[in-house]
Length: 263
Image (cartoon, rainbow, N blue to C red; front, side, top):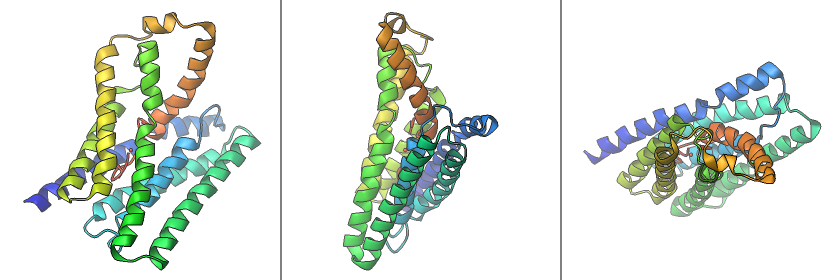
C-alpha cells in the first residue's frame, strides 16, 4: 500500500512539474517574435537546467534505486530547459548577454559533468548516492528559493501583480507531492528540498490571500522615486523568475515561482 501511495504521489509530482516547466512558453514565444531577449535574464533557466540534470542523474537506478519517477520528469525538464537556453542564446539582445548566457551554460555543463564523472569513476554504493543527493539537494533548494525576491516585492508593494496565483499553487502542490514521495521512500534527498519548496509555496499562497484585492497597493504609491526605479527593474527580472522557476522541478519538485520545481 505504501508503494502504491508513493507511486501515485510521484505521478502527481510529474504532472505538476511538467506544468511548471512549460509555464515560460509565453515568455519565449515573445522572445522569438521580437527576436530579442530584451531585459529578460537567462540565469533562471540555466539554474533550473542544472537542477534537472542533477535530479535526473540522482534518480537513475545505479545511483538511487526505486526513484525512476524522479528521473523521468527531470529528464523531460532538462530537455525543455535546454531548448529555452538555446533560444536565449540565439536571440540574445546583446553580445554581452550572449556571452554571459554561454558562460552560465558552460558552467552548468561543467558542474554536471564533474558530479557525474566523480560519482561513476570514484564512488560506489552509498557514497555515490550521498554525493549526487547532496548536489541535487543544494541546487533544488536554490531553485525553490528564487521566489523569495518576488515575495519581498509583494510585501513591499502590497500587490500580487507579479506573483500569479496558479504558479504559486503549482509550486506548493509540486513541492508537497515530492515531499510526501520522499517521506514514503525514506529518502531525505528528495524530502528535504521539496519540503522547503512546499513551505515557500504555502507562504506565497498566504501572501496572495492577504494582498489578493490589491492591484497596485498603497505601498507602491508611497515609494520614493529611487524605490520606484528599483522596483521596476526588479519586476522585470522577477516576472521571468516566476516563469522560469516556477520553472521548477521536482524531486526537486522538484522547483520555482521561479517561482521554476524540483524533482
